Picture 1 (tube, rainbow, N blue to C red):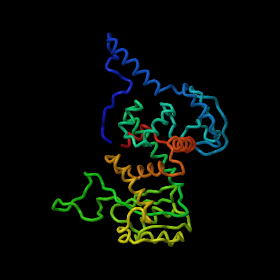
Picture 2 (picture 1 turned 180 degrees about the horizontal axis):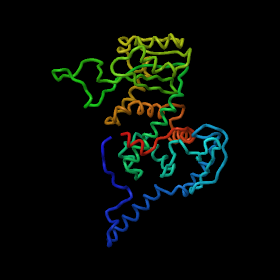
Picture 3 (picture 1 turned 90 degrees about the horizontal axis):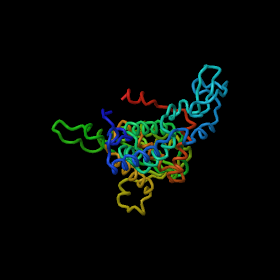
Length: 336
């Protein structure tokens, strides 16, 4: 991660001035009023009521059920004690909100911006957070979605296809004469995408063309046995048909090229490929080490019966409060 110096969103040019004009004072005061509206104290948000409503059955450290309530934190959050490992904890221990300083309510705005394809820079400006904070929150979101997407399983009629996405310019491999490699080369990621008209799974299958082993690893655990697979004549798909006993509806790629969109039986999956490519292009400069995380984000945003953003935020926050996945700020930046 590149080193950068972020200016506090709370500061104004006149904070240390002994004298300010009427206009300067007006701008400074209104700017700070807006800042504090977006950065309320935890007690003022009543989030302790939300957090204390979470049912705690065991210790997040040792998983032992021999626990009891043990007072409250300064923010009126219930504290627990484990008789087995002798440690104290709260409902947020070992979640992505463990040790959070900014209220959970800010995640509503953060997620709404991300779901509207907002960049890290724009999201941090809108919410008056530093870029490092917004980057940290995005990484915590990625951690959460890695767990969430493990449980997605497609069923019924499943469409399957692949498309290719380029590596960043600095990683492009050239021939000895300086020209680009031809065809589907190791300069392109193969992304497998499956869709049952409700949920989506998108997975990196590696660089270059798909193989039997890559396709098997990508989709075997995400498609229900006995489903119907609609796909092109990619040979690597056969392993899924055999092992999952799928009904098979296959179309040759050369025949599909002659059809318009309305008559193309693979139109639903082609449409998802187009949307996913557009989504990735919005974030085109992102570190390709996080390509799978961006795929997970797209899948979450576009899976389920409802695409309403507030309903998506509801699902994600509920999952986050109950899922023991954490990422410490210091650990993230020291690792990078």
